[in-house]
Image (cartoon, rainbow, N blue to C red; front, side, top):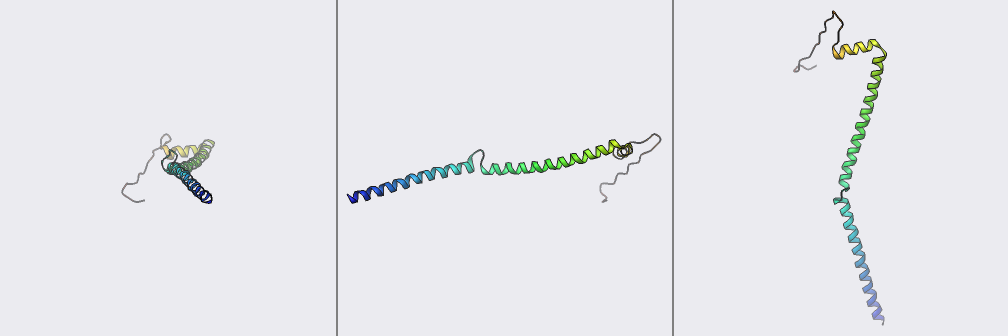
Length: 111
């Protein structure tokens, strides 16, 4: 009788280890699948996160550029002399009876 109990106990332990190893194998396979082959795997998540960071930096850059341009616009439209200076420098506007000379540096000469 004692031998039968020991025998059944050993069989139960082996079955338990085998069933646990099956669960571990399934969990391991599912984990590998999610990490490497799934649509939202770690590699694609890392790439998307890098793109998000780049886009956040671009957004901050463009927001600061917009603030700067808004300030310049306020300065130009509040002062007619500033507007005239800007138009003359940027677009080569001139008054009547006035000649405008534009000096263009040569491409091969260093400045």
